[in-house]
Image 1 (tube, rainbow, N blue to C red):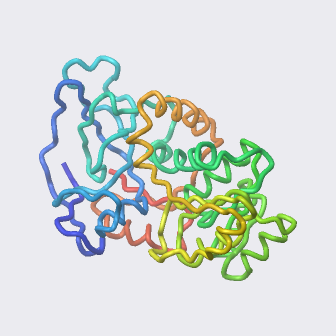
Image 2 (image 1 turned 90 degrees about the vertical axis):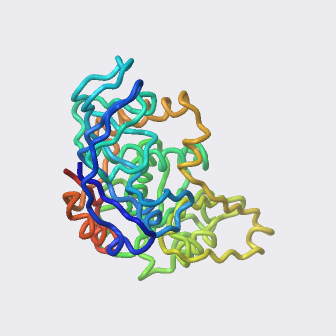
Length: 326
């Protein structure tokens, strides 16, 4: 089988290659899954560079997310069928044609989902839902401020907020995204290249600032979100795509009672337990199946073209996810 591999941490364009590896076979209680689509997430690229929270033993195959169909059943597996569309929940190394996964860590999907949308079930909609519902516990009618609003998570935040009755202020780097995000359900869009984010948030909130904010960028962009918090407001940091530190005014935290804390989806999955994970997906899958939650796909690349795919994923002008297929 074809597998994307890297033997050293570094620039993905330099360290990634395609190797031909033996197709694995499922053992008792396991499934062999033929993967058909895999999104390229920032966490994948951080891991390849050696700067993620958990790093693989080298040489390794990247990829933490994907979708495909059951190719073969191991002994004692009776609750799955050959050809059934599934998502592996607890595996690394999805940038290859086949993976073996314990049947207890595989999510069956309802008929009708495209491979593209199925491949993005695990990370982005779950992050958006958990940030809004479990971490921030947003109340209906309240403002939620976020940066990188055109990202997959950002789009899911907009869609879920519209579904649950929250209002969103969405920070982007390109003004041409405004109309698209407003059409998606955003209440306000701020281009940080053209506008003062903090002042614009004050205008929108009657000078109060926001109670809830989500930062996936860090650096100057995330620091602006901290300044836009109102009294008692909370910022959740769940990404650092700028690779730059946040600047925090201690006076704001002291005198306005604001909170800044981090959150990591991988840690949530490790501690949640199967029942809680099942409840999460039983909530999200119907919303994905009926189109309430969706994200555009900017382009699809064959596994053999992984270096071009990574370059596209890191480009600032793309609008949607980059997928590896084949």
